[in-house]
Image (cartoon, rainbow, N blue to C red; front, side, top):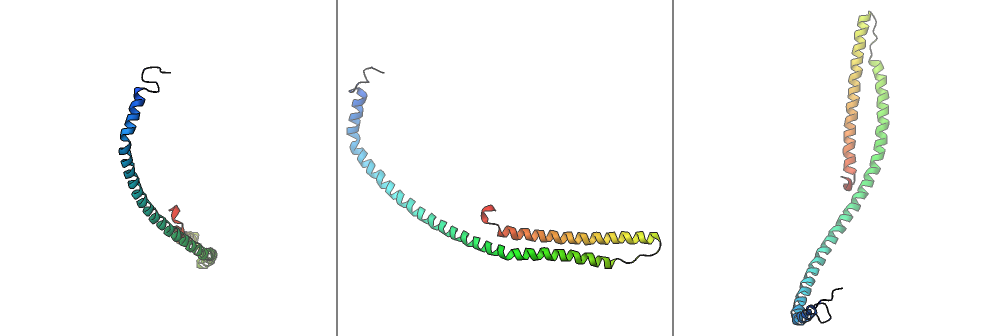
Length: 156
């Protein structure tokens, strides 16, 4: 514990603080009134800004709720379309299989002609497969765009 000349109850430091407090009290009161006035004005502005932000937030929440309703409705309309599209895709594949059998010409004759006919048949089948894959790619692209449009904005 420090027992020097400036550490007792009537130390010079304590005396200076007492004098400064007495002399500065009127100035502190005037300053404090100004500080409170500035704080009150600032609090009013902050309260106004907060009210505006709360109003905007309410509007955004209402818009999000509306969009969620629209999204649920769109999903409800999209589900039967997807089911029907898958059903039609399977039917289309079956029809193409049947028609491809009808398109094949009956090849008779020497082995060279049958080889040429077989190569042409393979090329035609490859062309049909490419067409199907292109159709599937277009469908997937369109479906992706629809899903992206229906995805909630938070995840974008």
